[in-house]
Length: 446
Image 1 (tube, rainbow, N blue to C red):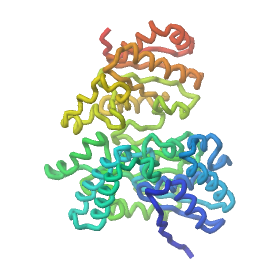
Image 2 (image 1 turned 30 degrees about the vertical axis):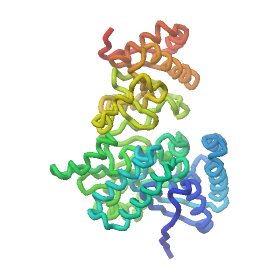
Image 3 (image 1 turned 60 degrees about the vertical axis):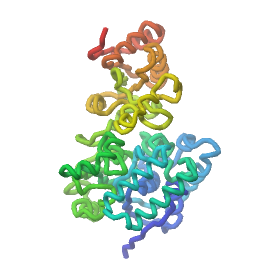
Image 4 (image 1 turned 120 degrees about the horizontal axis):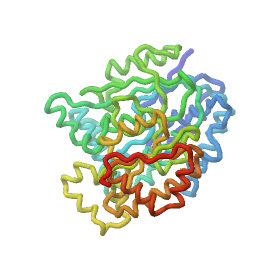
């Protein structure tokens, strides 16, 4: 008596937490459920799998709900409180979850530049459908025009805001909790242009992402989410000119594997590779990886591993103006927006992570043995300012772990570390007091 349901829900005006609550209410009590999701729907599914933490912990703890503090987050907070109760009372057994192209770590497109997000979505869809008379194309075009006229901010659209890499929802779903006993299969992809014309078609989105993507979601993000019990996660990663965000259910290679993942009861499924959730496989461009923790998310550190702080060289940190990456975004640089990095813009300019091309492989290599904290800094400003920011990060680190904290500095980053030593002597002595502390400099112009 197997039954198949399609869950129609609001994806812009409601958050994934509200969507998950609505679905949980509708599912019959004490039922076994398998999930198939596409894109943002995966966030809804991930919330439901939190009801299957094998350790007996609640689906949403008080510390989880604290991520959604404030009156503007009350809807999410209330939805998750009730969702936890419904999952417990109904004893829903979410057994298998096939998650296709999910922005589990967020997507760069869901930035506060809503007009830019929808413009790229519109162009991407136009490339795929090949006709601007397509109803989906016409709908998205009308939505874009309407939102741009209103100058809407994504905070007014909780369903979109949840996909921002910095959102509380993404932070919640990637915390080192669990593991969940729900079986997970990830299907991910990367669009590659074929021939001169094909490469030109994806050129604009490549400039925007600067990493592997499927036109909508950066590929490395698809491997994040709630931790799984040993042997309960696997993945298939497809690259090609016919791989994009809208084709996973049409392409025989991915559609066939989706069915196989649902039908097979064994943990080892033919055609898939084992997955450690949070760790993007080798060959996927993007610095996101298990063990790589941004300075603003130090509460996610694993406390039983040493920490290495990775300091980049000159121009090795991305810089954003307001919420728009300018350095090193080739499309913005070609438009002459480098001038926006003028010192006159003050705090509008902020560091926004390390350049993946230079530091991705190194960060992933180090993550095999350390918790890696990539320390981006504003290379336009003085070394003293960078050292002060580094000192604040290190103070935070020392308060969160008793493990050794090490510094690996490239080029200009080495001068920042040396300035820390001479300008923050008390902190330097505390670092040295940790067994195993060391500073390694690579190509520093001493």
